[in-house]
Length: 70
Image 1 (cartoon, rainbow, N blue to C red):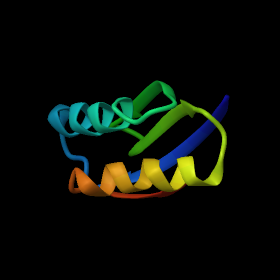
Image 2: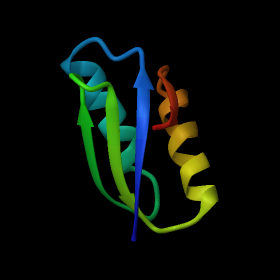
Image 3: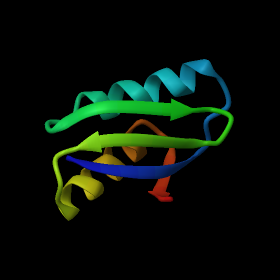
């Protein structure tokens, strides 16, 4: 398993955290998601591979938030 930390832009409330958590948990190969409003980040445990990181970022962006490796 791999651990990726993403910086998430645009989260302002608990509903945002829930949305980001939900879209990340729905991705194949993701086993754990921890999203923090305070730090503006998400820690995701997932199957390894660069395409997995791209999928994580894409999922967050599709929910209306910015994301980058962090």
